[in-house]
Amino acid sequence: MPKRLLKYKNYDVQSITTATPDGRRNANIATWVMQTAMGGTHLVVALYKPDYTIELARESGILNVNLLATDQTGLIRKLGQQSGRDKDKFKNVPHALDERGCPYLTESIGYAQCRVSHTTDAGDHELFICEVLRQVVLHPEKEVMTNIFLKERKLIRG
Ligand SMILES: Cc1cc2nc3c(=O)[nH]c(=O)nc-3n(C[C@H](O)[C@H](O)[C@H](O)COP(=O)(O)O)c2cc1C
Image (cartoon, rainbow, N blue to C red; front, top):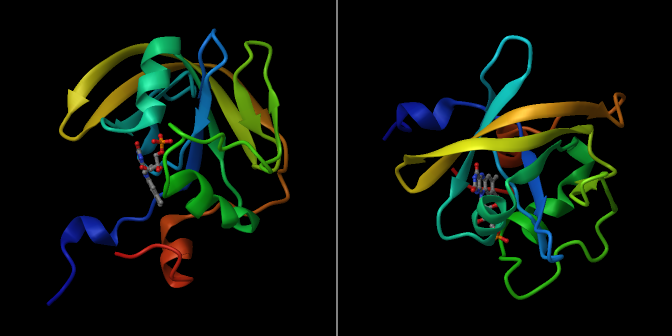
């Protein structure tokens, strides 16, 4: 039985980090992220409705899109296969805060600092259309982690 068409698509792997003014913060893993303006001024992030990340991103209206590197596979389990509702996911994960108090991952290739402009329903995910305030490159020498890379190493199924 061949795979269904959309299973052939590859995606870059990111972590969405966000924080609310009262100090709650979280990080997930997200592949459904894309640029939507030629100058890199906007991007869209699809967030899964039941998750903690969407709750905090809705409340705060700010997030960072951290582009992960191939040496960060340990984050898949830590950030992408459990919820931050009842634990601090940043424990033992190298990170820092931007000037808004929003975390970013210091071992990632870099991060896009975003402000949520609006959201729209999209099935079991909601699309967060974001304005990119700043793009910061931290580790240009690293390789971008992709979905296919994770599948080949059996770190995810599909
Ligand atoms: C490879 C991979 C890709 C994922 N892509 C997305 C995505 O695009 N959007 C999303 O909201 N969740 C995505 N997830 C799921 C969340 O990362 C996962 O549900 C996480 O545990 C949510 O944690 P939270 O409740 O702390 O937000 C992905 C997970 C993995 C492992």
